[in-house]
Structures are given as structure tokens and as C-alpha cells.
Length: 207
Image (cartoon, rainbow, N blue to C red; front, side):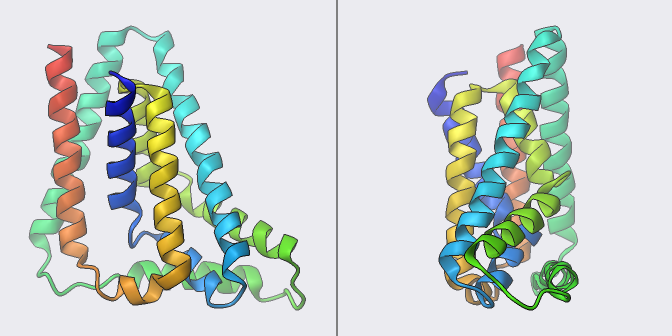
């Protein structure tokens, strides 16, 4: 796959998957408590670090036979896509993102309960650590690993980083306001359709 394909895939998938995610709300909540620029730096650095790690793991797949790697990538993309479309179909359309917001709030409260003084360094470290932990094992991490194994790794890396940065900026500037207007069903359905599309494209390349 060429650079542009990997870049576009990473950008679209991460942007759609991260909006309204737990890490999105962590950024939004922290930005209401601390200077936004420091929160943005911490959150973005964590997401960049996770993206680098995920792409690196995806590249390790190059040590295995290509047809096996492609087959696993196709299965993961289609599996994720069908699961998300199934979840979207079961929603009424009135669901909110309150569960994700509540989990994010709980994580922030737990980490900040014993901290009384703040510096720009401690804010960045707090935003970095909370975001990195929340992102570990998340659907977007697995998606990035899968994309990097099936597309141009550098393109996926830059696209995913840009997607993460866009979502982090939205979260720290107006996260709570935007989240209240996002349809969880629509995001879930769009994500599912995108996963299926990538699965079909990967299958066509394998054939």
C-alpha cells in the first residue's frame, strides 16, 4: 500500500474512533481544571507515544508470512466492523456518551485526589499518564496495529497522529459542548462501516 492510502486510513479511522472515547473525555475534563495548552501537550504526547508503539508492533508482523498477516488483518477489520454495526443497530439513537464521560471523570478524580499543588510539568505528566493508560488496549490501538501491518507504516503513523491531534484539540477546547451533540449511534455506525471498508480493500489486495 502507498503512503497516501496509509495516511488517509489512519486519519479517518482514528478521528472517527477517538471522538467521544474515554481519552477524549479525559482531555476535556482536565482542560476544565487546568490550562488548556498544558493539557493538550500532555494528551497529544501520550497519543503520539501510543501511536509510535502501535505502529512498531504492527511492523513486527513483517517477520511473518505476508498472506497470514493479510488474512488476520482482514479478519480483524471485518470482525470489528460487524461488531460495531451490530452495536449501532441495537441503539435507539437517543444514547449519550455519559458512560464514557463517567469513566473518564472517575479516572481523573482518582489520580488527582491527593494532589494539592500544580505546575506546568505536573499537569503535562498527569495528562500524559492518564491518556496513555486509558488508550492501552483500546480499540484504536488495535486498529492502528492492524493498519500498520497492512498499509504503509509511515503513512499510517502520520495519519493517526494527525487524527489524534485533531481530537485532542477538539476535546480541550470544547469537548463537553461537542460531546453533548454527538450521536453515539452515528459514530458507532460510521466506525463499523469504515472498518468493513478497510477489510474489503485488504481482502481485494490479498486475492
